[in-house]
Amino acid sequence: MNSLPLSVPPCTLAHMAKDYESEAHVVIDGEEFPVYARFTIYLGDGIKEWHGTLAADEPGLGFRLVSADHAQLRMPDGKEGAVLATRADSGGLISFTGTGPAPV
Image 1: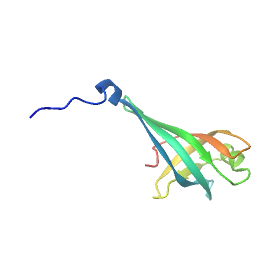
Image 2 (image 1 turned 120 degrees about the horizontal axis):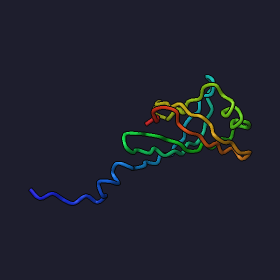
Image 3 (image 1 turned 180 degrees about the horizontal axis):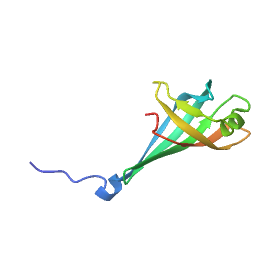
């Protein structure tokens, strides 16, 4: 049986990224808010990290998220991942880093 060449060099396979975007909810200290989430999961050398942005219509949500004790990103299928807000702007865009397994 003939083997086909890889379309991606083997050294690249160890360092891949996958993008996600979806309507979701962010749960801040037990209170749930609708958001639109965009994040990327990076895989490399056995390490998985993820970060992205949340867009929200809720006034002041960025401030609440930045100052929260506990925050989770909840996807439509119910999977959750802990997030830590790193930046929030006045237009409702919130940057975050995942602090555990990604919700996928």
